[in-house]
Structures are given as structure tokens and as C-alpha cells.
Length: 175
Image (tube, rainbow, N blue to C red; front, side):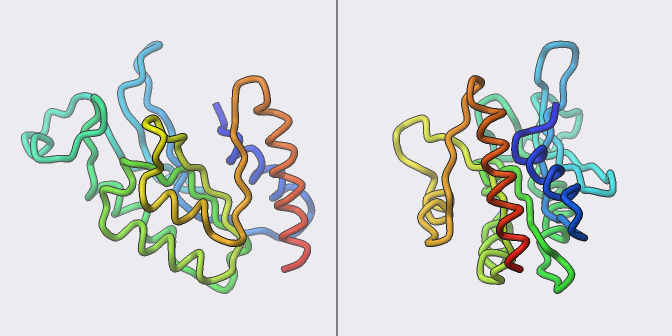
């Protein structure tokens, strides 16, 4: 299933403007109805594991944990960080998501900040805080002067996607 961020970016890409979208989207890995992990997927279809509930590798015992998932930071960085390189031909960055797992990479957030400083539009998803406090990196993104925050629910997902799409198209026209 496509996330609202991915759907809005895909719609903007189809709006007629030549658009190069880059950034590391994250997708669930499922076995039957059970979610067993997450992977990073590039626009050209390359994949790398981000997190898993089980890994045959003994090195995974040293990996950081988020809930029941072990985070494969090295794998994530090998695919995600090259996607976050600022290039002149990039019209839009889609980062789905900037969350606890991704932030275990010490290189990820500085790369996100470089993108933010580039003034290339970013469509990023961030988690809703469970304890009432944002992760510090997430708070910094949400407090950025150009940030627009949308709270998604199952009932407003489609309407919000349309709002995000409209805002993206406006940003890309101004570029």
C-alpha cells in the first residue's frame, strides 16, 4: 500500500512538470498478516533492510532496537544516504520517514539538514509522539519556518493527501 506521502509525490510527479523525486521511502515487510520488518526502497527499485524482527546474522545482536525490531543501520545507510545527496536536478525530496529507526544512523539527520538547507522542497513524514514529546531531530524539522504539519488519520488520509498534493504543486511551480 502506498503511503499518503508517496501518493502525493506520485501525483505531483504526474502533474506535467519534469520532476526528479529523491529520498529514501520506507516500506513494511510482511509475512502473511504480520509485519516482520521494514525496508528502504529507492525510486529505481533498489532495496535494503532497515529493521527486522528476526535475523539469522549473529551481528544483529549488537543492532539497536525499536520495539521488537532490530535496526540494521549499516544496510539503511548504504542505500538511504546516497539518495539524500543534494543535486541541482532534484525538484523534490521525499523522506518517508524521519523516525526513531532512521535516526539511529549518525549520518542520516545531518544529511536531512543539508537537504533542508538546500531550499529544495521536502515532503517528509514524522511519527506522532507517543509520550507527548517529539524526538529531538523530529522536533527540529517540525519547527522549521517552512514546515507545514498534517496529522493523518484513517478517516482524513485521502483529503490530506489532496492538500499535500496541492501544496507540492504550488511549491514546484514557484521553483
